[in-house]
Length: 179
Image (cartoon, rainbow, N blue to C red; front, side, top):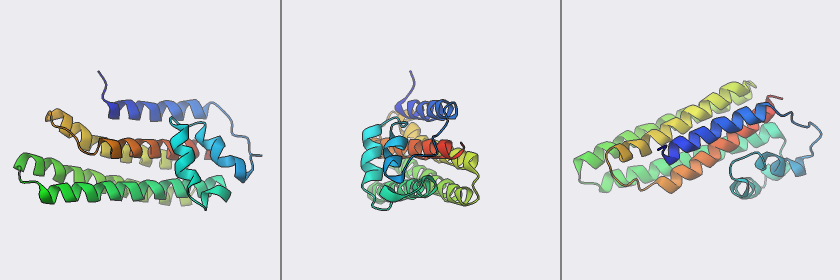
């Protein structure tokens, strides 16, 4: 049976392929842009809340909205890595310390991929933005999978779920930018 992290990756890729089959209407106003993006994501409510809570996003064009989505995701990756670091410092069990240390590396790698996604966005390499988001998503799921392999509870499942939803938003917007 597929884990929730594998399911999240599958949904990301399904969204990508579904979106590439539909054309994006260039005439959408900036006020209609967030709902237009969010209706293509796996969790429309989350998307509307996260993008709608950003004042800059409300009037942004698609390109700027993608930058906002990437930066929101970077913020969440860093916050999750801070939690990992906190758990690592408190942990005495060597096995868990090792898992948390590996997880921290995974989140640092995810940060690097997202940082690269921002550079690809600036050069309008939207497929590369998608690939970078996919790679960042994989890094965050590797952490969770390592806990599952060790038959241990992963205390950051909710954080990873939020990250998977943010990665999905990045993929959706980049797919729309490809049109």
